[in-house]
Length: 341
Image (cartoon, rainbow, N blue to C red; front, side, top):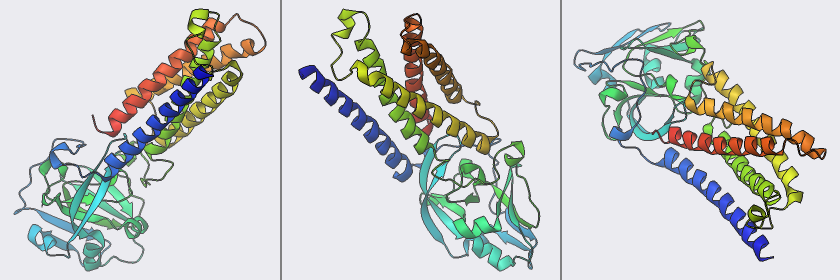
């Protein structure tokens, strides 16, 4: 009875630790204001050095009044400061106070013509991206010239960056020199490489969902591993495992582990491919694939064991332990990507 209580307490502690860890990470990454020098940078090339006194913002295309705005003229628009989180499709996120003016203010002065469909952002480093007019109205993007109460740093898009709330970072154009309103389905830099044109962040596409699911799978995987070890032929090993990890639970916990793991992997693969046009482009993704492959071997080798055969017990144990360890590595790598290390 004492061993059973100890095992139950241990299991509860592990579950609470996992849940609290991800809650802490979520709050820290989504709410903490990140200093500019610690804010991650993603660019397609080295940052162009632009002299704001010579820079102009061209607003053209399907507009009634094309604009050529100087830096001072742009900053004369109604000012707005908001704390907004930048989420990268790779999993990193950081939050800053962004100061600028609503994109709608500039488009309103230019006058968008009937039939317009998209707003295209052309950047000094050759980067382009776009938002539909419907998305502009929904998310109310900011044309920013300030970050955390200072002038926008060079690597973060000086002199002008788009902040597109609730959109992944590749819509946050930097070093903007032209805003073009068009009536066709423009395809931007990363979008032309297969990335999703619709970069809106949803609970399905957000990394927190699959991170929590994988954490639950890790807890179940640990329970499954311990219950399997407790019922091994080695009495020395078995007697060291608390009674809560009983053989009668092993099948059900293992089935739950496989179900959550495979379902999460499939959903993650689909959403990642939809966003990036690829899945295993990172070490994190490749380790996740290895986790699944080891788990498949564990499932296949476990089927004969259910029928009473002990022929594949060693293979079953080794493949499942390998899958469990790889899953832990996958989670750690995911956390590292999320916090930007």
